[in-house]
Amino acid sequence: MNNEETSQFDFLERIEREVRSILNLKNKLSFSENLDNKGLDSMNSVKLIISLEAMFNITITDEEMEMDNILTIDKINKLISDKLS
Image 1 (cartoon, helix red, strand yellow):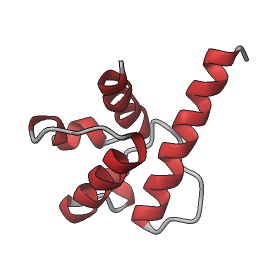
Image 2 (image 1 turned 180 degrees about the vertical axis):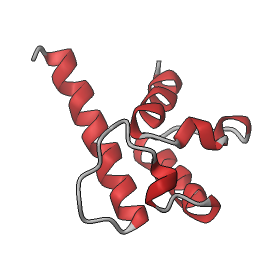
Image 3 (image 1 turned 180 degrees about the horizontal axis):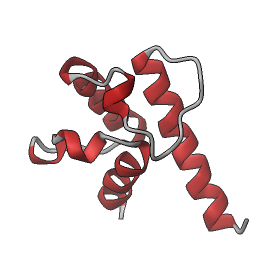
């Protein structure tokens, strides 16, 4: 892995840990796993958004809070990466 791939993987790992924390899950999640099936409901999605905003020092708009944008760790990563670029 080159440095960019390593930092991207670390980024995904941070998101994955935070998702598991919010959803009270012990087992690691795949980055493409549907979080809806793991307990991501509207209340948990708000908690997750607030946590990610603080963690990455970003603001996620109401339009960006669509469930489709946070349905997988990969999609969350894309949302955050787009905000940071």
